[in-house]
Length: 176
Length: 281
Image 1: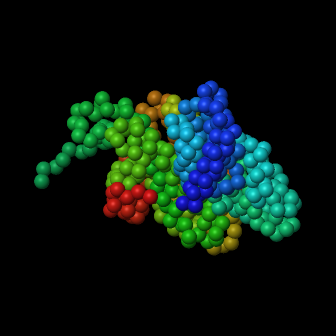
Image 2: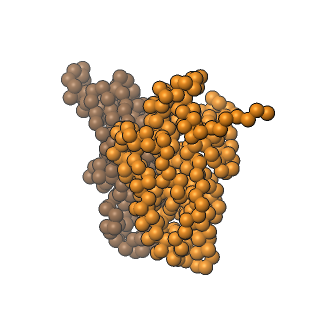
Image 3: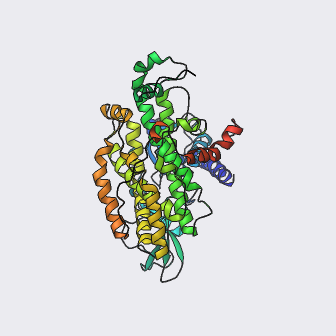
């Protein structure tokens, strides 16, 4: 409930912003697409509400008619919430006719998380994904003296780690 | 009482592909669409039943980290089941979706392998089951990426990454418990012993699998066995566990012949949607 309300407010402010920024009537396809991308960039992941669905690589392609998204994990319960949030954001911004399609292949990978998304994850206290076996830096103190506590964390996309330097536990976004 | 003629395997196969309300003589014509439906149903039922089994641990696991790992694996499997069973419903074309197939079929209509319906037992028994199943599922999904059906291929490509985690995690637990204390070793040995008789069924080929291979949908399960034995053998050896000598295999899950345990599982899983058929979240 809280999530939906937050998004509703954001979407309204976004709509107001986009109205003031581009008072012209949308005519060209490329303009429409960039408008849709702007809307999507404001839709946050419900589990990690600092990164957008674009920064997570969930949005695969956008045309004037269709937004194609991909689930991160097969059983991720956030997938339905994300689709609902995107639908609400598109509707609120006037893109009622734009369809949302889900593509499973090619399978989502953490390589699709954008550099901005990685910085935001780190700032939020989640270590961004690193190749398996590589050193994991603690997002609190930066130390690489860290150890995995549990391969599965609070959500399917995260594992649980502990820093031996500052003794704080933290989440690692799993390389997937 | 007059005695009934024996039911032959080919009769069973033909009956299985019949849509409701169709006469027996239509069976041959209906066989083809039934192959995709049955292939998807088997894949979906394996994932669904094991996902439900694992979810029984939620809140009861030995530690919070283990609780999380079991719940996450359950979620992955239920996610796979949703995709496979929705696709099965579409292939069948009778208006059934994944929920209908999961919640409104009776025990005889489930086509999962017997391994996944086995009771959780203790944590070692659960991990023994997971290791034996996930090792097989990973080998299977690696091959199904090449399926001629785009849906099977896409789900396999997506899920194989998750199953790789399940396989590694369960292999590590088999080793840790097998090569642990006297008690943990005994429990893991008992777990492997309980589950081992259900392994041969994973590689069983029948008319549905053969027909699915002929259409490029599926892969030869029997051909996976040598690699499976190599992987399982290496882990059991590292775990200081004996590699079981062949017991008499128990088969029949793919044809709806289940152990008593599946009915109890379905009772819990299906109670709510059957009692309140229009209930939604």
